[in-house]
Length: 372
Image 1 (cartoon, helix red, strand yellow):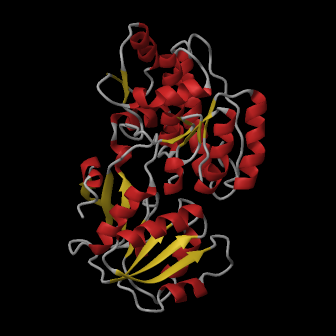
Image 2: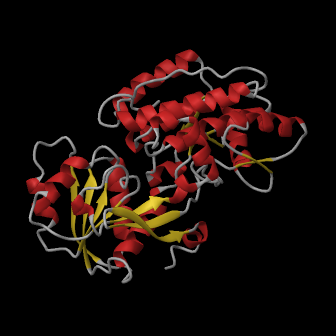
Image 3: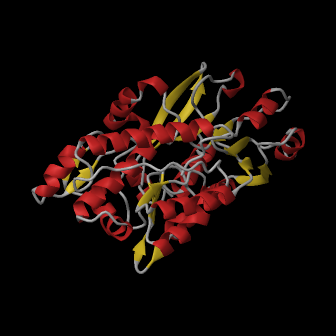
């Protein structure tokens, strides 16, 4: 359940290819409990209403779990439906904090994700904006895409900032003009801009900024330092997921070399499918409830390590009664009881037209309250 058309088409189609690769790897390892995995693909178009309509097709197909949705609005709409139907939903990209408690029925949690909650990203963005070795802002304007993801993350950034928030502005990526939005952002001359968007829906507002006379450092949410970097990004920062540096990521990239570099969240989509398959194998039952009960145990802990492409090893270890610790393409994917990872973030900056890595904020940083 991914956007295979529209403004998020590239992100969605790369995610679908990653899921197809995961299915191929599972089936090359003789499938789940000796049975092949079959794929039903639904185009959500990045729209919650379309996702809800398409979800019924998954129910009709008798799925036990699905990878999706991508955007938080769609996942928020789908999570209670999946829980009521006993279907496991694993999102590769929905980061809204509300989803930490979503999708619960009969004591089981049917919504999980292979990306962390926005609370972590907010703490990282606030650190970059506040810290004197980075932006060191005393006043900040927040600019966020106008949806559940944008408003949710912007609210968390605001809650974690020491700096004064002088503007909190939403924007529609499909607008014909962004001049009025930028005027609102810079009305009180902020020291910096905290910018929340998603890959593919940021270009209009940023191009308008590049053509304007406004000037201030920006701190981006994750996933937007990729491809060609415009000259006006110089000195911009990002709180970026550090996940793309795992061995599993490079393994997956080689397998999908025809579409490299992978779009954001493609690796997370691979992990979502593989984890559900490993959970079903471990549980001895290919059902939503069985996956829900088992997926945390195969994602981390002290078990034997398995990674990208190693479903034959999953089956061998399960047959031998051994525990599993999946080390994924996107991260270690050690899921909490809320079925979400506590991932590391990188502080990155554009310097001389290149992405410069400045600091790794590891899991322990967030477990201690972001150093507060």
